[in-house]
Amino acid sequence: DSGVTQTPKHLITATGQRVTLRCSPRSGDLSVYWYQQSLDQGLQFLIQYYNGEERAKGNILERFSAQQFPDLHSELNLSSLELGDSALYFCASSGTEGSYSGANVLTFGAGSRLTVL
Amino acid sequence: GQQLNQSPQSMFIQEGEDVSMNCTSSSIFNTWLWYKQEPGEGPVLLIALYKAGELTSNGRLTAQFGITRKDSFLNISASIPSDVGIYFCAGRPSGTYKYIFGTGTRLKVLA
Image: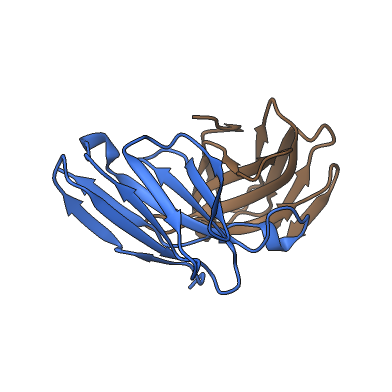
């Protein structure tokens, strides 16, 4: 158990629908990252939050949005779903942003597998 | 999207052989991380590197942060069947907060 909790583990939905993926970071970690991994592909960076504020944005579609709440958990909202959105969505957390130490490594959750039919 | 160049894409090796993989970037990175991912699971951190030239070991694994800060390699010595998985490098471009991941190296070990 990495300490990063993601729910749900599996989700099957139809095109055009909206889903919310949830992530609870490791205890004490302030930063949350979201990544998308399509079948047999690498990890595409979507977005990062630090202590409730958006810090960095990657190739996140306008149909997707995220936020980090005061209790530091984060949610990734995916709307108007398309077949191509089927993927594993990973959340990772880290302790701090700028320090050159073990606190800034990413610890990953087990992922949420989204299937869009 | 932006990704690191990681090679090789896949490797089939005999048990006991040594393995080497690397990542290169056009940007300077201030942190390099190496992860292993097994089917249906999230990536697990193997080694973290923070300084140019740094060489770090974790058991049979050794990784180095390139002097130019644009590359890193991972070596696995005396491979065993449980080394099977996908290995990813990840780097943090200087001046940013995000981590970019390599495309992965799929390793298969034949007993």
